[in-house]
Length: 511
Ligand code: SAH
Ligand code: F3S
Image 1: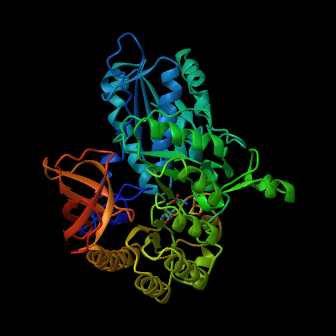
Image 2 (image 1 turned 30 degrees about the horizontal axis):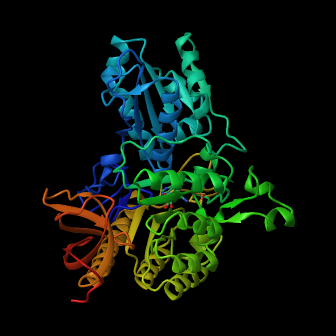
Image 3 (image 1 turned 135 degrees about the vertical axis):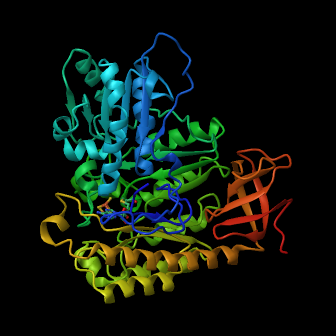
């Protein structure tokens, strides 16, 4: 497993857990044997109709962020409408689709390696259709067809409604490509299939694209301009999920604080004062979703320091069912680096946002994303990142070595000049510090009582269940008569670095 990303604890928007380090694997990769719980990376999305005979079978594998996993649910829904069923076995499939990620070079390498696994299958069954979806498809477009000869179909993130037509085109003997990015597409009317989830938590995509143009980031190029989804359709989806027994929704967007709905279309086209006055903000959307039911937990990801308003923080504080957990990527603790990254805030501005969170939501957990070794990063700038981490005291962090992406502003303007060994050294320093901070945070929760939403069996013991508290810490306790979807009161009696272990009680108690 080679990815320069390292995460502590699992989180809403990524699927990483860390911990120990192995020596360097080759000159370009730092292989933390980090144990990314990549159990979901490359996992297949399944519908419940796998046994239906005579229908075409789809094998759909997903990589990358939660938005991609959520998109796969839309893809499955579109193809199910066309009479497809899913299969967990690519050997049984008529169509194999990989929903890809392009955020770092490793993400793309992994997909290219995975394609090799399908070579023999394609040779023995030339009728097998192989398609690439998502951000790598959008970035490389028709080049993918030239470079990866076994690929028949390429579809970008805004082209999933077109998949049935693209598949027909391949059926008729042609290669098929649709990488058009849309001004309007939010898939608002498509009800995603939810299988593969635990039946308790679900993702709801609230917007698409990103207008921020952070200089290192490929997302604005692969997912297009920012547009928000009709709030009524979001609330409707949350209501349906609640009625089906779900008890937690996570609202997804690249920058949820930037959500604004004024009738549809691109954010940049919302210009008039009247449009703005009649628009729905993220704070308003949060309220609307929180009011679906006090028993529906609301989470969201990802927040952005330059757009997160006190209104949003007050809304979180006001509603018990909006979880006290904010993922606020900082990327670097150095103002000069943040400037090169085009993040739109200084260290001081970021600190001010953290102070606002701590003031308005005192028991809020905060996590972040950090990049090490971005263009021109000096030792002093790196030290500033370490000092900021200490100052905030993050609960979790997702840490990445900078990976240059073609076409980004950083690629055009700056040199990727930090030595690989220095990037790796700095990554290991921030990981070590974060481990210390995470342990400290978990220890402070020990002894406290929390309201926990039960998610399912604990990994280690059939007699135990696991769930999460509002701060997103995993809590493990004896099963008793509890079941997934229940809320329980839980007293933490001991802890590991990221998990609280304890028992359930009838109400809040102090021990
Ligand atoms: N707003 C998004 C960010 C998507 S990318 C969200 O929903 O999380 C996730 C993280 O990947 C970023 O916060 C950044 O820390 C990291 N990242 C993005 N581009 C990168 C690159 N070129 N190299 C290394 N890490 C990168
Ligand atoms: Fe990327 Fe920055 Fe948007 S990290 S997704 S351009 S907020």
